Amino acid sequence: MTLRDCLAQRKLRRIRPDPLKARKSLEAASAKLKKAKELLADEHYDATLLYAYTSMFSSGRALLYKDGIQEKSHYCLARYLEERYVKRGKLNPKIITFLDSFREERHAIMYGFEEVEIRREEAEEAISVAEEFLGRAKELVGKRTR
Image (cartoon, rainbow, N blue to C red; front, side, top):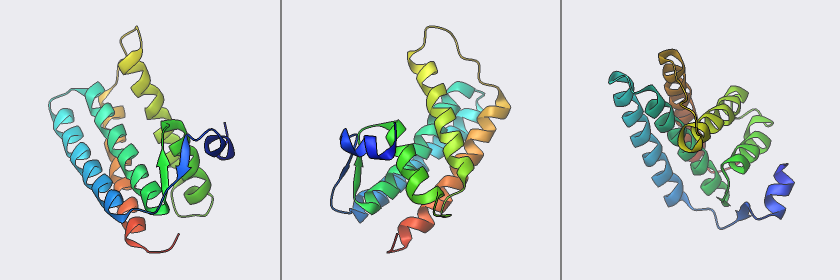
């Protein structure tokens, strides 16, 4: 599915840019990242990944709110970021790679029938990428132009 498909199927839709929701989404990203770090310290690696992913999702959603886009799909959020931010050199492509990977792992953890084993190194990497994304999202939300 492409960005165009996401828009056509209304999994992404245009709204008025909402700086308040963008800031609130960044606050949520920060809170989820803090919780991920606490879970890592307690050696709850699957939950660490879930919270780090949620932080990344909230960072991405902040950029969408800034741009006037409402999401109804985690997958489409990533396609939007890829098209509008990565291809324009405003976001590191590895962020989208990890966002997609962690989205799939999140799905397996939450909805799968088998236990998903998350190693400490993977949980630490999730936190690292979430921190990078949050920092970059804060910079981008602070700018007035796309």
